[in-house]
Each structure stands twice: as structure tokens, then as C-alpha cells.
Image (cartoon, rainbow, N blue to C red):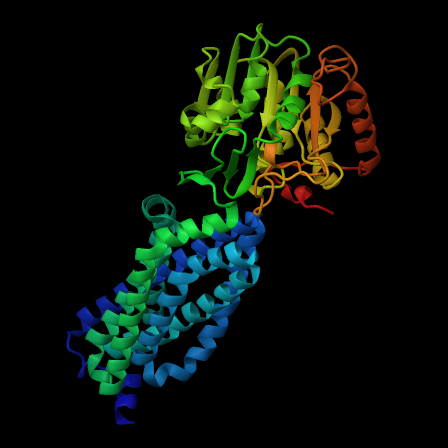
Length: 536
């Protein structure tokens, strides 16, 4: 009881270091633990966005649940203030284990159970409670080391906490993800967290521990570090097994680029599947239906200069290059790794007809929005072969502002074609795209084509379609053809030659069917109002 009273009142008599040194070590531990805590939060947001989609929703869920749980953790920590040293040590060990393994467990729950939302909320709660319990205990410990007024102690603690959060927030995207990846990065962060928390308690506050408490902390921290180290050693085998569970047994390429995860499945160009951030972008068995319908209606009219936005797989460019009077094709793809695979991978380059060998094609590695703002060329045809408009990260590429930039880049009688999602399955998204194109100053003509026939079996699509040749499904694909002239005048596809998979009668009937689904008063999406992408 006397030891507890001394601990609460402060004083450095029982510490093995001078008060200033002890205070510095406590603040250093706060710095490290805060950095680790923010990495756990960002890791959950990033992995949830990848596995579930809709990054805005997942970030809101993780952060709001975690902040709520931090309040609960702060209240619960009041019971541990009399045993602040051992309590802080055990909390950091638990936080290191739960936070470090969170990414691995989330990925496993999705790969083998097909669901990760419940695990996401559970980890957000647990991590939030443990992070929230840190500050009250650290407040007690810093007063124990170097007695000072409560306001000064709080200022020091929060300064170290905020700076640590800054470092953790910058380290996650610029160091941990590029160098270690999501799973290994989380495991490494957990090991650092356990080492920092354990070292502070077992060195600076070792005289406050009973022999039993000391043995418990040593065993807990060594066990946590051993578990994380073992998981790090086995993480490659785990990733291979999880990918097989998600994508099937024919995964050939799996690489985490600076932009996204790229996965290629299938052994040849007849069975190839291209996944970007877990979403099926290209399925070799029906990609021709999508790309023919996307490209050929827009090619009716002047077509000397063609711009392809997205489409780094080269499949849209392949259809464009079939026209001999096309003089130049510019492909603007944000991820150079995709264009590199389209050039070098035997199956993908075979599927795109080795389009990148054609001297008329030029590939540009850039964000389409930023690139259009700086480009001063005019194009006869602009083909928007971008990820599905329902993917949050791509919504700015379906905004009225973006189509305004496209309208400025179009030559006289120029045409734009946009993949807008399936009109029957997601009418709100489809007509928001059409309204956004009109708001950009262009006349529009929507159309659709059927997707995979009933009973058709394609590549594994566990993570959901992401647009392109792999995102149609039985509901098909919807498109918006647009130009500066009024609908029906030359250059907007009236009487346009179309591929056999898209007959004129089918084009006309599809447009009529989509028109019946049109939502009254649909407004365009802007960069300020992303809510219009949400489905009714």
C-alpha cells in the first residue's frame, strides 16, 4: 500500500535513472506507441478498402469506432492507475499482438470465410480500447518519474503523442507499405510496439514490479514477439494460400505496386484474369464483348488522334489500332506496372495483340485528371476505360469537372465514350455518369449490351467486378457516347458501324430500356458531392 501511495504521489526515489532521463524515456515510449497506434488504424482502413471497397465508408467506420473505443479505454484505465507500470506493460503487449496480427486475420477471414466486416469492427474496438487506456497510465507514470503540474504533464504527453502520430502516418505509406507490404508491415509494427512498451516498464519501472509481475511481463512480451516473428517468417506462405483461396489455383503474378495490387491468373490468353486491388478488371473469356462495345461506336467519324484514359492492359488500344487511318493513340494509365505487364506478360500481351509494339501507340504514366489539366492537344476520340464508377478512388474521374476537361480536349466533331456501369443493376450510378457528362458540356447517347450468357462460367470474381472486361456479369455493361454536336448529328454514332456483338437494333433497344430506368431529376456528380455515386 505504501508503494502504491508513493507511486501515485510521484517522486524518483525508487527509479534507476535520473528524473530528466526517466521523463525523456517515458515521452519516447509515448512517441513510439502513438506511431504504432496510427499505423494500426491506417492498416485497417487500407485493408478494409481493398477487401470491402468504398474507402470513405470503411475509413469512417474504423475511425469512428476506434475513437469511441478510446473513450471507453480511458475510463477503464482508471482502475489500473494503482498498478500503472504493470498495467501499461500488459496493455502494450496486448496492443502489439492484436494490432500486429489484425491485417493477417482480416485477410484470412475474407479469404476463407468470405466476410471481414465483423472482424474489422472487432479489431477497431479492441485497438481503440487499448490505445485509449495508454494516456491515463502514462500520465501516472510520468508523474511518478518527474513530478510536475498536471497541465505541463498533459502538454508533454500530447505533444509526444501527436508527433508520434505524424511519424506513423507518414511512415505507413512511404516506408512500411513499399518496403514490407501490408501484412509484414503490421507484424513489424507490432514487434516494435511490444519492444518499446516492455523496455520502458522492465527498465525504468522495474523496481515498482513484484517478482511475479516482472516474470509475467517478460513472458508476455517474449511470447508476443515470438508469435509476430513466426508469423512474419510464414507470411509469404500465408499470402500464397490466401490468394489461392480468393483467386483460384492459377495465380501467376501478384505484385503490390505503388498504386495498387496487381494479380494475373490463368496460364494463357484464353483463361487470363487481371485483378486490380482485388477487383476483376479483365476476363479473357468475355473481354472482347466489353471492349468492342466501348470502342467501335465512338470510332465513327474523324479518328486520327485517339486518347485512351486508363486501359493500361492495352485491350481498348488494340481495338482502336484496327483502324488503319488512326495516326496516334495515347494511353494514360496511372500505374506503370500495368502497362509493363501488358507489354511483357506472354498471356496479357497475346490477348491485347501486342498493341504496345505498334509505333502509333504512346503510353503515359499519369493520373488522367491531372494529365488532362496540363495537356494541350486535341483528340478526335476520347475513350474512358477507367475503373467502375462505384469505386470511391475513381469518382473524380466521373465528375462534371473531369468531363469539362475532356470537352476542352475534344477536336471539332470529337467523341467521348464512357463506361458507366450496368444500367439495370445500378441505375443511379449509370444515370449520374450520364448527367455528369451532360454537365461537362457534351450531348449524350446512352447504350448498353448484355453481359455473360446465363450459365456462363468466368474467372473467379470473389472480390467483385471493377469495370472493364471483367465487370459485366449477367447484367451487362452500360456506356455513354457523347460529343459536342446535338444527338443524332454526325459524330455522335447515329448509324455508326458496330461490331457483331453489338447490333444497331440491340443498341437502339438497349438505349430505350435504359431510358425507362432513368431516375427523374438526376443531377451530376461533382468533386464536392460524391454522395451521388451511392446506390438508391
